[in-house]
Image (tube, rainbow, N blue to C red):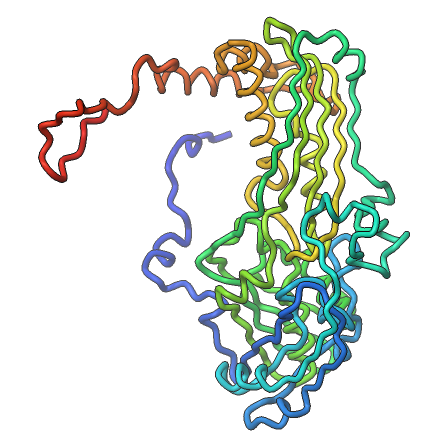
Length: 450
């Protein structure tokens, strides 16, 4: 076997086209006869749709069609749980949800038509914090899902109220610990910000076949969602993943593709929708925000004995990939440390926020942030060097993770040693040399940095 390529630098196959601007993204493509789409997005966090009248907008010259919930052959979608309508139907659950989609000869006409759509809402109480959403009497986001995929606002992954991971005996270990530290740490929603927003073209290929061109990271997730929305066999839906101008996980989600497909099939012409940055921020997903409560027991010499961690995850209005993401959080939330006794519990909760989804690390960065803060707190309380505490407890080859998996090729020790050596840890003096009060520095001069 030839290993000549290992360790060598190879150019990206599309590097030259990327930097010279020759690559054609979805928003650059034009198909003869193509129309342009714009959406009416909800202006309410939680409300019933009392009236939706598109008749005036439909009469505007240049408008070729408007799609709403009644136009989707199957309006119920969802990546894992069937909880997400293609178009809001009778109710909106977050500000930015798609209520209607217009196809017109130009974007300007489509925008004008959106303004002419008459929609009237009956505002409902809303809930935004997942901890409040779990309280008795909290506004219920999905009444129709009760007992099927949710209980109150609590999503039931595979029918269970929580995700649990149990290893060892945490109560016994806490009783033997010299120090117990408990803190709640929140990780916030974050927005993926690729330069290219979400974009999609739907091209009808006759009455029962459609081609979708878009910047999806997961065409094989989107294909069945589009087929379901149109009630078409899977082999009648072709999904082409165009070059992607950045995704970071967010373009895994089912977003605008079923909507554009329904509209294109209704008008019988290709339709393109390229979201503006504002639309992208309003409609698409964020990194899943989670409240983490960690209780950790440790011996006086720094040996970790037990961790009991609770994660309350804010899925937003629809489950999307939250079950997959928080599954990772549940499994790896104790970090790269040898802790013989584990108890992890995760709750996934609906709120009236935009849906949460994948974002760089897929459920691992949130608990990693929390557990590393806990390690710093423990080191401070023990009067111990935080690097020494970590090196004492890191997983090594042959150790078993909290899931019981035996680990091989564990590199965290070598990584920390490299960081220690390159950073000069512990740093004996400040990085920036402080200037005396009576400084002879000239105006605009930068102080020396070691």
